[in-house]
Image 1 (tube, rainbow, N blue to C red):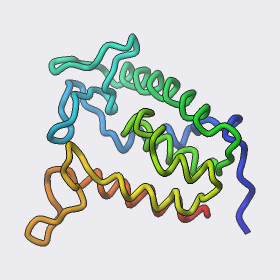
Image 2 (cartoon, rainbow, N blue to C red; image 1 turned 90 degrees about the vertical axis):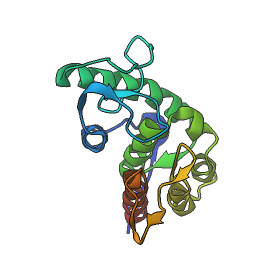
Image 3 (cartoon, helix red, strand yellow; image 1 turned 60 degrees about the vertical axis):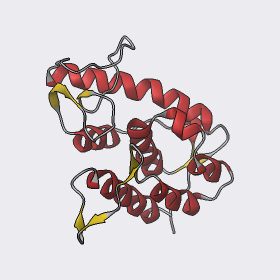
Image 4 (cartoon, one colour; image 1 turned 180 degrees about the vertical axis):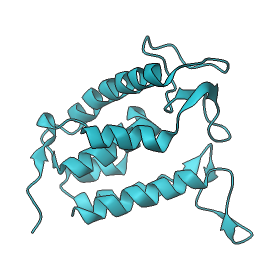
Amino acid sequence: MSKARIAVAILSLSAAGFIGIVSHENFTSTAVIPTKGDRPTVGFGSTFHENGAPVKMGDTTTPARALVKAQAHVSKEEAIFRKSLEGASLHQEEFDLYMDWVYQYGTTNWLGSSMRKDILAGNHARACDDLLAWRKAAGYDCSTLVNGKPNQRCWGVWTRQLERNAACKAVQ
């Protein structure tokens, strides 16, 4: 039997969840465009600096500064995420993986997502499956095979969704 879910209002991203985010994002000291059509990122996938200014090509950072940037980003998004699930409950693992998703896709996408709607309705297993709908980058379906092989454009976007879906299902 699985442990009880906890009210989202009292949850926060765990240390393991934060490490998971920065591990998936891969550090870059100079701004890059991670997938075709994406916006510039620096550090651990940060698209904005702590002061709210957007990252521009040519911007640089250090590993320590990048962690500060990532934590500032997480803190801002976490408050919006928590408020969007008022009255809902999640396992810590679910909270962490949805925050990982929010870090990648943003709270604007989260607020309109079927995942959020399903969690609010208590349909946690369906919310896990909803993750798989998020497989595109700049309009391109990242789950598409090219000549029977994973595409080089954004295959990592798809495999990250598969990992989130599996981790989500594992705690149901």
